[in-house]
Every structure is written in structure tokens, then in C-alpha cells.
Image (cartoon, rainbow, N blue to C red; front, side, top):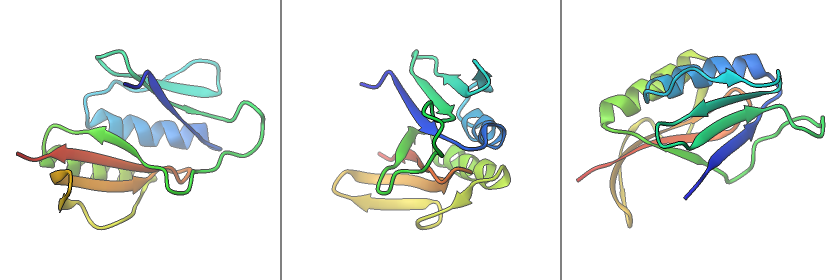
Length: 127
């Protein structure tokens, strides 16, 4: 459904360090800096995740109410994703990593905010 997702940052190096770590736990190669302003991460399916300094030169800000979710293979990888994020400049948010049940079924998930405040989720759908 998505070709790419891009979030803003005011500190490209801190964001690259953070995303290299958290996306690395999902098997994604370290990001490529294309023009000194953006970092791109490519999935095996061709989708892209990117971090950028805003084109208009204004400060980046996170969206209130927005969350970007990453599909994860298993609960252990969710935990590794969360730990890598906290160790590389992210902050935990919401409840601790664990099982949640709701109208969409049983899921194991964790939430983080990246160094720029963007809210992320690692989610494993359980059988």
C-alpha cells in the first residue's frame, strides 16, 4: 500500500544512528545519505523509510496522534527493536513491550519516540 514513509529531523546524524540500530534489528541495511539532508532505508520489497531535514528550512516537529508501525517477525525481535532504540537515543513511550488484545486481535508490540519525537511501533500479530 505504501511506497515510502518519511519523517522529519533536526539532527540527521542522531536520527541515522537511531534508525540504523532499530531498523537493523529488522534486517534492514544501514541508511544511505543521499544529499546531506536525507537518509533512506530500503526494504527487500522496495518500500522505503526516510528521515529528512525539512525542505522549507523550518524546524522539524513530530505529529501529535501519528504513529508509524513496523511489522516484526516475533516477540523477541520486538524486544530487540525496543532495546536498540532506547540504547541509541530513543525514548520508550506507552506501556512496556508486551501483549495487547483488542478488536484487531492479539499483538505483541512496543512503542518508542525517535530522537526527533516521532512515535514508532514494532508490532507482531500473534496467532
